[in-house]
Length: 412
Image (cartoon, rainbow, N blue to C red; front, side, top):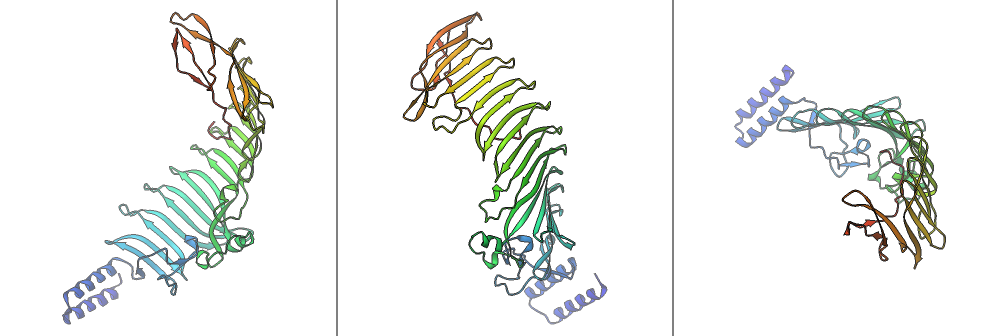
């Protein structure tokens, strides 16, 4: 602290003491002097309230000293509790230039923002975990189309996890799309709202820093309702060894078109087709050697989603076949690995509800001496279950469930 300032403080204390002011005032005065001794003279010792602002985005709003929005915040505003600096803010013309938030116990910053305003860069925001490792970084910039944007990088355990691009939505863009007018307090001085839309290329990474996914997004004007419909264009997923596992297309945030899935050896695993997330066409599955595993044919018929499906064993033997005709009749056959029929069930359409029942099942069981035993058991007429008996003891009923459509997955 400058010597002249110490002299001024000493003189002030002497004056207060000589005038014999009340004890409470004297104590308050001394406490104020202590705060001045502990902190820079340029700081405003104020309680920052983020609600005293106009604008939807935190870092681009205009901040005021009160809710009447008459006086903008200027210079430094620090929050000090029991002599510990908790928050540090710097404003110019009401616009935040700097913010640093500190952990109470370690005094390490856990969040900081610095307005740079150099070339196309506006500012940088960084968030840290308790151990001081970065978890999120946003770099705000002006695009070549003169739009305010930011690049967001996310981290896990200090390792880069994803990189995405976002663009702020202007109030005029919402107006053109027919959205209700944005209030003056909900947009900043440049006319931008709190809403953002993802655009451009998004990349995610494995823990070993290898690329995991490559996605593409298109800018979508919205007011919080269509933010998830930005993914558009080619999509690719790679495993942690850098091998391509999924390749496909997205349209308006949904899987659309043909998707190819790959085994770790690079051979085709599955071929699937989607119509905006709806399973369509013929799906085919293959093992690591290229032999067929299944063929599923999807349909728009109201009574069932997959009217024709076959599945094979690793050596190519037919294990399962299902055929359902347009009138609702059909059958479902299960085969043993040697090709012999294990069971046959019949389909019928009753009151627009497809039912699997009737017929006779051939059940092969193992008795206590491990010798084969054959039994002919009728299906239960009212359910999709059959009873299996081993040595005349009824075992847990077996249930038949409708096959579930599989959307593009990254957890192969």
